[in-house]
Amino acid sequence: MTTDYSQQAFEVPGQKVSFIAVTDCSDYGYHFVKQSGEVGMIPISSDSDIPLGVLQDEPTINRAGCVMLSGISMVIAGSATAIGPLKIDGTGQVLTGTHGVDHIVGKGLNAAVSEGDIIAVLINPGL
Image (tube, rainbow, N blue to C red):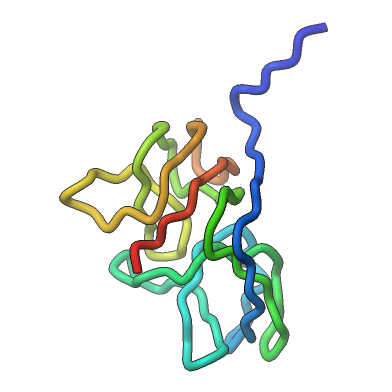
């Protein structure tokens, strides 16, 4: 039996830090999030937001959530994507990006066939 691994996401965790969900983040696992205050996080609300990292779980309001700041994380794609540079959409999902045009948040290590696919992303939020 042959297994097709071409669409499988994987993780190689780098630095992970706990932040408090200032709003309900229960629908934002594997999305990029942004910082709010000293120890808070909130979902991305605009494609021009500067992300903190990728939320690894789904905390409700006032609960701690784990944010991966570096490494390779699984991330949900907002549309079909190519291997290579990625940008975020207005919800923290990733889209194919262009260097010199978009704010690049990471590199897709495998492609997404459609919206909602989970892909492996080398995180580089570009602080």
